[in-house]
Image (tube, rainbow, N blue to C red; front, side, top):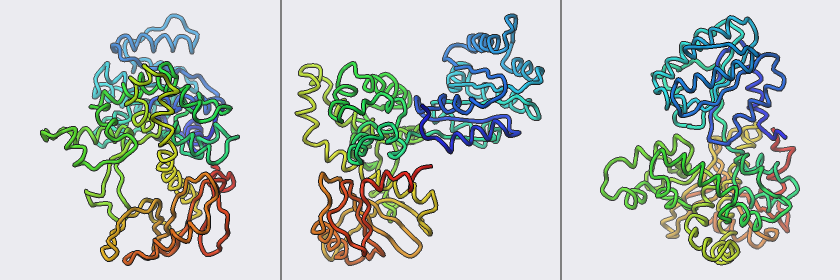
Length: 460
């Protein structure tokens, strides 16, 4: 069953019916690129040639590609000396033809980056005015982004570009619709938004059982995906294990990372961090009121699944092997799991407001993020979970991952603390409580967990 991706699906279908000849779809491995294209092709009236590149030689790739062409056209005696020659053949057929070149980065590795890009520049230019289209896809996000650089041969050659990301908290919840809002938050906080992972979840079992079965067990399918696919892919960029282990469920400044990973100050760390960010592995975050301040700028892992793995699984591999999943869950995870999820809940709240903003439901909004305050008078500092910046001020929302409805007493206490800050006066204060509220107050915004997953407000 095809879930979500409605905007992306519209883009692919629009490309197929347009006069454009080339499209780029890229995103991390197993994020759903192939599934998206297959869904769009259900209504495509033409011949499709789909080929997944390998890291083998150019000649081997051409041989495999030729075999796919033979099968697609039912012509057993075809031979091409180059990929370009194959596309000349496609044009000569005077038919609607779509060629999907999957894992393009592998071909670049085999043949050479500039040579491959130059070859496909010539191919795409030759398709102008024909009924032949090509979709290039790739999982090496950084390498695919390079195709969009001004000095790349393929610059400005794509009529449509899709950077396919993981599902956010709302779209991920469509894989487990029967759960409560609190359970949905917990599942997303641990397993994230990769379709490949979400399809492996068993929503008939609770979170603890899924963690043990899929992530802690040495042969767990999600654990195997992380260790044999994601980590190996990221390790091609730099010291992924060292960096990810340090970040875990936290966030660190550049100085903290450098002191631990690059104490000799070789100068390589900055480049490595940039490459990890280009490949969607980590991201740089800062409060919306201190965006240019280095000591308030942090690096954090970009995926919930990787956060959980490096917080709880990777450090405890030996213990899992010696005493088993049950003991590790009880001894190392159970006591802190709610705290772990509560940090991820703050990001879900910000994502909720982002979805509202993109739908036009928050007029005059300028930014969404955290807000750092430092009240010298009260000798108090801290960070608000979620702040919406508007042209005329800030709205502050505190995120509460509580087991029971939030009480009026707790809300009044939080409001009193916010209003006591001498140099910050928000235009509005609100709360997002995953378990709802046991009171009503027309003067403050109260958003429940059910509101976070309301189809009427958030569905595409």
